[in-house]
Length: 173
Image (cartoon, rainbow, N blue to C red; front, side, top):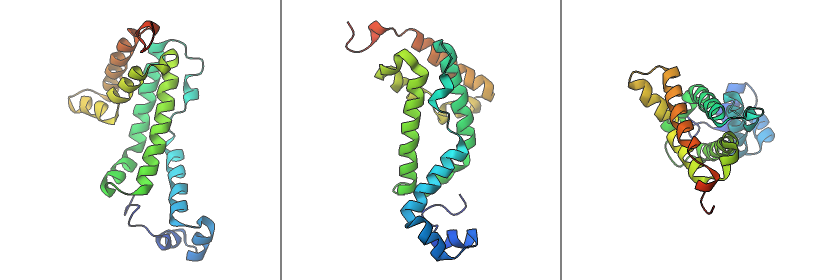
């Protein structure tokens, strides 16, 4: 976070860990392997919600509310890392790999929250588009508390999703 991934060398890591540079090189093998390990550590530290979160939660409105609340808390925890990635700019493979991993996890989480609507690609796309870090932030900038912003987004999504039925799914007939 301090200098950015692209400006950090394996020698910097060795110095910070107070070990010999060869120890870092032998342990990780390459800067890419080190970056992959760091990505895993960061995501573990941030505690991205998992699909198991919805086990035992039956109704759609409760599932959507839980999704929005848990992702909002995740966004709060990840704010410093998100800002660090924005400072780096495009083309840093470390952040591109982390972002790709994040979107895979997010897709699985949204589909788990949607339950029977998980195969409705429009529903998945709307949830992933309507709810994001910027939506809650924009509502807060408009004078809403965090709790109010989360409730508004949750109500918006749940209300729209409740209008979907298996007959609304593409190809259903």
